[in-house]
Image (tube, rainbow, N blue to C red; front, side):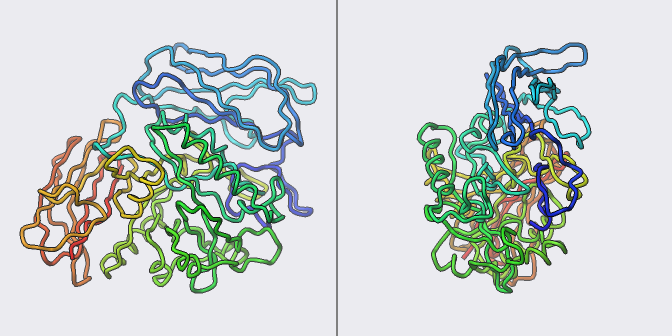
Length: 516
């Protein structure tokens, strides 16, 4: 790559004779654990990742987990022995019983003692030399994640260790369930980059005609889904595809059993940045397409060197949905939400989805802030930070989740729960279409907890049939952790939807109920 534009925790990248001031003569070592624990959880999971140990072998001799309190600490031994780590990427899962009942925010530290080149070292949580030390906190929730019966929480944009190149890598897909489950998540869509999935193992600059990584990922997803009844992996990709202007945009392809190629912005070959696949071609194949972060990432350098673009109106006509809430609420979120509403008002039935775009990260996201010079850490793009909640009439598997995601039976949230139905017809709700007869009454509910804050505003919103905008026709400003609204679906509306915001700034917004 010319520059590591995306910016993750890979510090052993070199480009020609350019100096890399982030380089360290030992592997990257970092720990991961849930930042939130559901009530009643019996075991605390910890993952230790060691990257590039084939260059710098180490012996891990001890791992300890510490819960730190103002006046005391509780320590658990996770490992004692002598473990040689000498592979390009090694990830270890430890689960230890919770021997006490914790609540609230608790500082957590994982200490790793290891030997490298005969020298003993001890690190806490990570060994990135350019990252300032800070406390990592886990919230032991006193109440379960807000959810109405029949709804399931998940993250539709998540990268595994198959997304691995000069600047990024993720988590082994077979390790995600213990961490995701204790956080109250029911599913995760594994959406690795198309330009990584067709590479040779450990050589991302060469294509693998046998698609070994892609095939191995399918086997892993199948294996994990066969093992679990309360957690599901959805197979997918984040494909780089050409838009109408011949620039690279990213699309989430969910549920595909055939590989969708796309390597235009992979930077795997110098000066080759034109799309090798297109949105139109993928649309013709009938794939389920979601515009991934459609208005983020087209900054100057990616625009020039990676031929990155954004989604135009014509591009969005080819999409089933939009993932504009992608880990944080910046300008990309605001522009994406505005465009989504604009498309709805023009009559397109396009659904909203939410995801984290996490590369395996649960507690911290490490990133390159200035190539080869400066690193930082962030709480954006953490697994489950932004969720899609899906309504299923029975306990879901991969096929049931996909079916309801495609139908828009879902809403986007970073905290509160929502419900939207036609009074007297509870089977009709988000994503559905009903005849706009006189007297249709819409019922909506919102649910929060002290963790996410009481409600500041809950609103029923209608999209005007003449396309001039939206109108709020029922609102609740009374506060509290529950809200119930009821309003008549007026003939002037093309659709209705519900939005909620809490006093702590947490939000949720539903997909529309369409009125024909």
